Amino acid sequence: QDGTLRVSPDTGFGRPWEPSVMSALSTEPTAPATAAEPTAPADPAPSTRRSLLASAAAAAAGAVAASLASATPALGADGDPLLLGSSNEAASLTTLDTTAVLDSMTTLYVHAKTGTALKVGLDTGTAARMEVTDGTGTWSTSSTGSAVKAVSTSWIGVEAMGGQYGVKGTYSAPHMNLGAGVMGDGLDTGTGVAGTTSDATSFGVAGSNTSSFAGGVGVVGTSENGVGVTGSSTNDTGVSGIGFQVGVLGHSDAADGVGVRGEAPAASLTAYGVYGLAGKGVGVRGEATDATGVGVKATAATGTALKVEGKASFTRSGMATIAAGKSSVVVTVAGNVAASSLCFANLTLLRSGVHVAAVRPNFPTGKLTIYLNKAVTASTKVAWFVLG
Image (cartoon, rainbow, N blue to C red; front, side):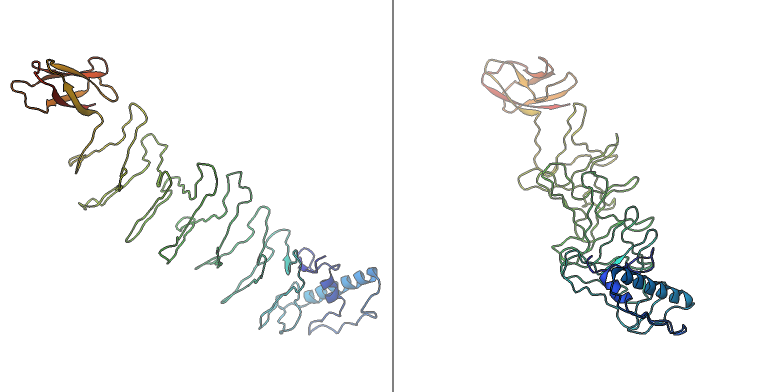
């Protein structure tokens, strides 16, 4: 055995074969003030194992019987032993200290077959305090219930402080992908998990995924009918995403859903629902992978759907050259041209008496042909543009 005092409510007394219990039980128990003075055993130090166990059991039984005989809580003074089955009070701090240095040493072990093994309450101050130089301050296990449960009716249920982590939760079956290291439940009106920091370089809540495989998620938020993740800031950025490939990714499974949505106050003329900023890259990009899809759609009921400040570039536009002595040119367009496409063209040079007579889409198939009213005497450039 490791020399630990183990108190178990299913027996009512410590295990008599453990050295610390044998030492305590081999001495004469102290009777309550109202009880008669017990007669000391003839041999307080039994010499055989059988007599030693018998003496320990008898002493424990006497202590239990004495405690049951008392109808009032045990209002003991400082220095009195802990009386099982009764309320114990003391004016000073009670300390349990295991002096032996063993890897498996436990100072206090409490076990309950059903119910709560240990319940600690207080009016003010600290009800229980654990200090460990190298190891675990409190270790609680439960097969089906809660290993540790803390309740506060008006403030903090559990408060932890650490040099690196205040609270660390580990999910014991990481490959099942069903549980969580830390879970917060705000019930009907509160917040499940809240994190705060006053340091400008720190994070209120941080999530990381150290998997070497693509697809891992550091923080995920889900909601059945509301918002999975929301971010707000009084003077700065509500949500910021930084990624090697994608900083922020929005996805919607609904047929008419929205992956990423940005809103701006209706009364503001300078606010932006979505703002994209890039040095040499692309500030905002929209892409459709299906022939019927739309990469970027701009709508406005009464205002301006699309406003471009600066240059605009279109892949379905360009320059074509009509050779001298010719009056037409065939142009190949990216994505092909349909019969319903809107095609435009104009001369980029002044040619007296020469103008664009027609722009014929899908002729030949997938291309367009630009016609002049007559052949040019010199090479002439024509600008063209296709919609749809």
